[in-house]
Amino acid sequence: MAVDHTPDRMTQPPARTLPVHAPLEQFPVHAGELRVGGQPLSLLAERVGQTPFYAYDRQALRNRVASLRKALPPAIKLHYAMKANPMPAVVGFMAGLVDGIDVASGGELKVALDAGADPQEVSFAGPGKRVPELRQAVASRVLVNVESPREVVELQRISQELGLPARVAVRVNPDFELKGSGMKMGGGPKQFGVDVEQMPQLLADIGRAGLDFEGFHLFAGSQNLRPESICEAQQKSYELALRLAADAPAPIRFLNLGGGFGVPYFPGEQRLDLAPIGENLAQLLARAGTEMPQASFVIELGRYLVAEAGIYVTRIVDRKVSRGHVFLVTDGGLNHHLSASGNFGQVVRKNYPVTIGNRADAGPAETVSVVGPLCTPLDLLADRMALPPAQVGDLVVVYQSGAYGASASPQAFLGHAPCTEVLV
Image (cartoon, rainbow, N blue to C red; front, side, top):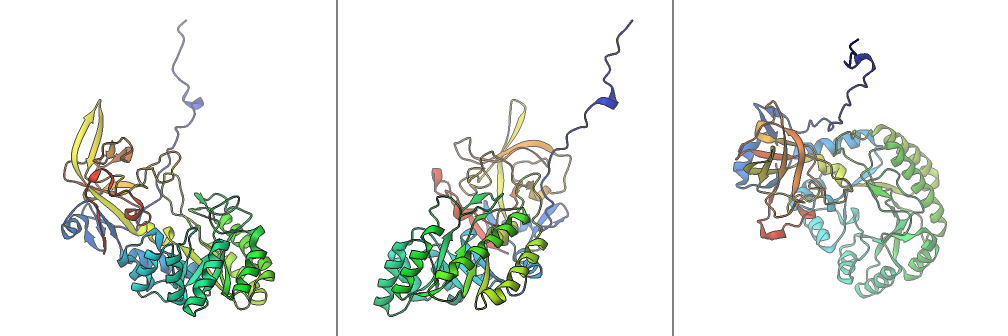
């Protein structure tokens, strides 16, 4: 008797559904081409005059700030952490949309002030502020987020020399972490801020130094897509600030609850739901009306404001087939976009969303890898990804590229030309 080896369809496990990138709607496609700032990508490339380049869309930036304003209580101030994208044109544009700018160096401070940011709404953070930078900050009358006892000593001396009391808040290293964050910046031993255990002594030192104390800065982590984790961190930060206020040399006028709002970069990630965060902040503000009546509340965001408003564009210079696999070789790579190559904090490399910008609705797709021009296997922009069929001269687009792109990449590596940036 013959044995039937045909698989039983009813008992086979269902086909595994591979995760996909979150929908990308900020750059429409018309006549097969991506539109950026209302312009066809190929025409924008001609206007820029070279590839590779970064392009940032003004309307996408406006829309992101507007969506935040709608979701968060009106009393919450939005600050732009310009380390995410310090291009002067972007900083100038953002300065007109948000309530303040957060800087992380003397160089960034100059850009922010040149862009017209109000010094009263500029704060300066960083674990290694040099004395000349502290002098810049005091002379500019911006708020210094103190991160060590050394800074208190230096600021006291500078204040006396300049005849201006330094405006200070204390960046606190809390005794908790932001759960689920891509990068933890608080809790445990950290180079950032002052440990909670050291705060009573430091606050006493600030009072004796005669500095103009305004409040606290708490930043537990970044790139978080779980609203419940962000809400928990905000609640804990508020409670911590309330406890520390008992030892403060003056009433709390400034409370920066950090940010941590994430954007979906990789397959399977979902967009952050802002509604629970807005509700949580409204509850904290209601409490603060009696518990911290003089305090203004700040949410500090960088990546969340600008990442999805930017793209990186690089041109295909060669199409190679190696043992049956297609490689699209482009004129830019990790030297311009370290994050997309997976070498800026990824433990396991994952693909950013990528397309062929001048063939964005073409099909069927083919599985290819996109590599840059550098002599290193690390120079990889897309690994075995399904993309529209592409040829030499076509334009590869990396989405989610408005943050930690050009300024966070080793542009001098191997002597290739730097890329340019445009705001459209």
